[in-house]
Length: 513
Image 1: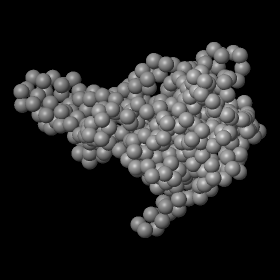
Image 2: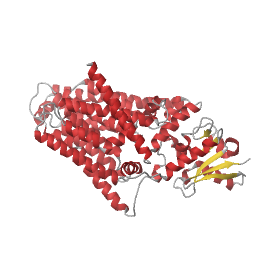
Image 3: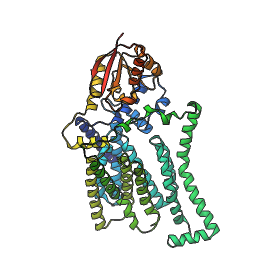
Image 4: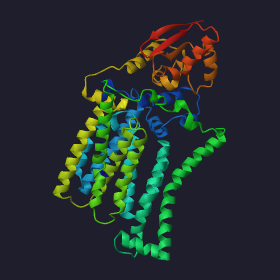
């Protein structure tokens, strides 16, 4: 037993190390993710200034990524989100392959997918929150399928805890509670004791008998209440805290500076040539084909014996949820967050598919599905309309390219670091990457600084340097510091500045006495 545990721990460490090395390799090739910079900035803000932990916590989305990265922030010379993602995907990868191998179900397909899938590599090495999303989706569907098999209260309680914890990742997960209602409704028919026959025979007996009907609805509503208790309680606690301490303002939901992509709507897409609609249509095509392939392990559950009505519900509801989420804004929602749901559900389906030795035909089909899925995933990344996904693919398969954004971050960091003890005023909803690596002697005024509003009116008192966007930059209309300078100029209030650094994206102005 101890030897197996030691082997598992070593396997996790080795796989995590591989993901961490991959992340470092991608960074040398020009890849970066703004979410990693954002979390680093929030952690630095927490330790550098006398900010309340809960204040910083409330103003950080996703909070779960912040907490996990905070626990690993003691590791020097590397962004803690990369370490967290590597550990999470190392644990998930070892668990998936070990479980599939022990159950002798789809082990080769699992190994091929885990080793070569760009979705898995992106989760483990991108420095984003996608690894947490993928882990959540896997656990969510794995627990549902386990409940279908065992009717265990343990699975229901675990689902409730899981949804409660992942409120700290994304409160929209509460929508997944709606998916559970039809699933539990059909499961309740199979839980009925002393009734045999197919689904229709059981439904007929249950609804025609008062005692059976009471037992059916009692079990159904009990299951729902047990699962929703922790997530709804957690959501209620958030509102209670804000009612008492936030002046009835739900600031944790509305602040501009608590998201790394607050202004991403300005530049959400990556287009490499003038044939915009060609790229969009290819993205749609590969997205839809991937939906079919990633849901194939779930669709395989159609052919299992027993409980045949509840199992297909998983596949139909997962597919319906993803398609409905993408339907509202097809271009903006063609991203890995939705595909991650089907990836997690598919991996859960592989583990759940069969305990017995699979047939030769099943092995061949599962391997073919894994190979086709990999091909489609590579094509999807190649034509992805999400800029960070496309950046990942280009860093993986093309020569190193130094992007203008990353060059700007490093140049401004180096420039301000040379100034030593200095004060900087910037809109940190835009410039958090530039502020995340400053030396300890430097300080800044940002959205959550107590003097932020005063500094916008009298920057000469609170700052030595101002960092603003260029007038041609898409985010310039959202730059509150740039707007404050324009307002001072409009009202004739003198402010002597000179440009000491300039690139295509930003300006650094020195405030003259």
